[in-house]
Image (cartoon, rainbow, N blue to C red):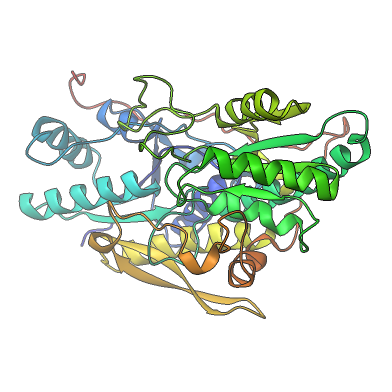
Length: 418
């Protein structure tokens, strides 16, 4: 294959370490003397022929990306349909690749992004165009299969465990005369990995969180209220962690906004915590506080896990090497070989085994009563939150982040019409 250019793009919800993957991609490609373009706002930027030329970035600026949260080049939630249904859009992508001699495409995202990378790799093969597509894993939901964990999850898990631990100390101090129940909502549409991470905050039955509600378990109002009441009676207060994806017995999301969906067609969630808070207040007459950290849990670079940072950079570097070696339609997966000490390596996995498949919490990780994590789950989660990834501080005491200001590549095609 002729060298050509490498095109990198970010997709879906960003994380505290997605830019670390970007940093590793840029550094490795530069070491291999491959020019890199970056899509502005993910796949949308490529369709619009809006791509940044990263040649102007200095080595120190590329390094600084690794401690910057968010998406340096912009992300998007935009799902391409099948090759047959979206033929015109796929053809447009191919035209952009050809016009700019893009020979390697790295798409940094979750499940839908893996699916997009797979479809583009198939299109290129069908069209006879030499293009190598590699998906770079990322998602705080931790729901990609085969890989031990997903870059972005470890830091969000650490943020969750620390936040629940510290909030619980606050609630305990005030419980006698103030708040009895505190509800903390985490992300997780169908998989309870982040909710499970909150379980790392406590080790005994009296430690918070006292109740964890997983998407893998149907919500039972009567059993939940009884557990809350019993916990307050025994401990003096109750900390509840709920995943946004918890469902009622009729199959509806506890927090689903009526008829609202995101750009991927997923139900728009958010609001499980206030719903539960209202339920507890009305049924038990207890004072309740709740919080929805939302973007905070995925952007908290100041609490990022060093293990997560290391893995985010490892998959970025590996993605470049896989692409340059002609490994088309694959994703660099993290393979665990030991729990203690935690050891892992990177292996390529075909996207056909990853796209459109969700990894949910196994039964062995959820306590029998459905309200907590098991020792096996703790062994899995604990290594992922280890080490604090340092962030340089400025004179104002705030973290120093880097936001690249790069020129867009000159367009060669007619404007894209959706």
